[in-house]
Length: 264
View 1 (tube, rainbow, N blue to C red):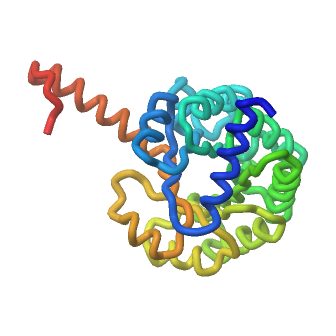
View 2 (view 1 turned 45 degrees about the horizontal axis):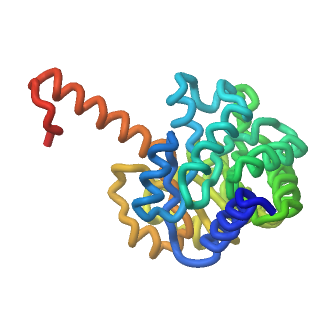
């Protein structure tokens, strides 16, 4: 096994361990410099953000504007920059059918990523959400591909029902998470739980480790989210958005005041 392979195996094992107990922050980053900085700051794991990556290269998110090959190349830069595990925000897995999920697992595992999340939203406004049976079959194919690798690779089953306010609400979201867990998903994710009551509902009923989305600027705190039973906290595209917004504030201050001191 090469030194690179050993490093990827170590990071994969570490990511799997993080899902066994406790609560950790999965910091979604948009570039290698931020990945390296956050790794140095002590974050346990990083992740790509499909929205941050798309915006970084002037594309739209969740519209098929970024290819799997482009996202894989981006992921490889993050993996190389940070000595912590990297998860991939793989949208719908870059395909509709279960066999497409296996191809995505192999593509992102090859970058050294330690896991990936797969949504049940098709990325097609007309098609919308995959029906539950297909959504579960897609996760099952991803899990089978991940389990066949020579190192741990965490598969997260993600439903967009709550995020998009779709029919069925919490009951449908939980049914989908149960289906994902039933075929071996290592982590379960239902973004759109913006308050502690909804977070507790998910963690109390989801049959496996849960990921919760908490955006930068939220009034929620890390201790209270952890106390609600959450295993993994994602930042989504909010960190990248905050960085861009702060950069704009800095330049507006320079142009407006003539001072290069950061604004208060």
